[in-house]
Image (cartoon, rainbow, N blue to C red; front, side, top):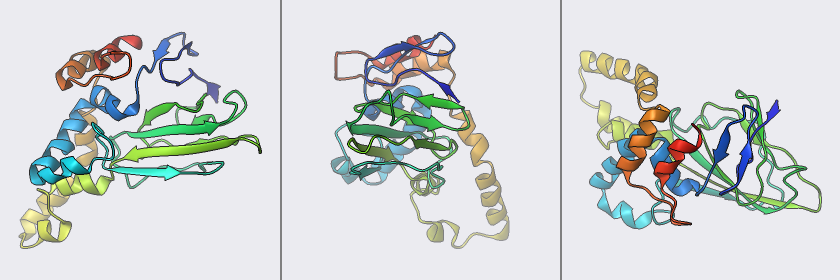
Length: 228
């Protein structure tokens, strides 16, 4: 494992590769910058299907359907992958509490062989369905809480099926239509990979999404330049 850059809002450090990393605003709006194709693929379809969902967001401008709080008081995630989430999507993980981030509470991303300093107030976006992740323990007299935001893979499937449950979607299909539907399901991973953006695309796509950070007036478009 290697220790990587600090992930705190607005905090800058040098990573192992010497690249400057900056996370100037929260994960609530950053998905629009890092995964614009994914964001446009599901959110808009759901709102067209049921406009009332606009009133039921977890937070204003939040783009995740689900949110989980863990009040600890010493939240410790075991190594896991969130297999119920969509493989090409991102979830938001935020840490709260009072603990020494130099001694514990780091987030570990196993397949990437990374251990990331993760102090209270930090938020990171990760593809939690495909990367094994967990956090290290903290001292007995310290506290750590977590807030995770995500959209379950079943919701994306609901949208993909024309905003219908599986029973309704498959009902009345011919054998050929069922075979076509099964082939389409098998191709979902490739379809998901096609939604991932390159850094050069992100610079243009972030501006197209039009998302901006409220703290400090920093535009998400700037995120595309900090990793160059």
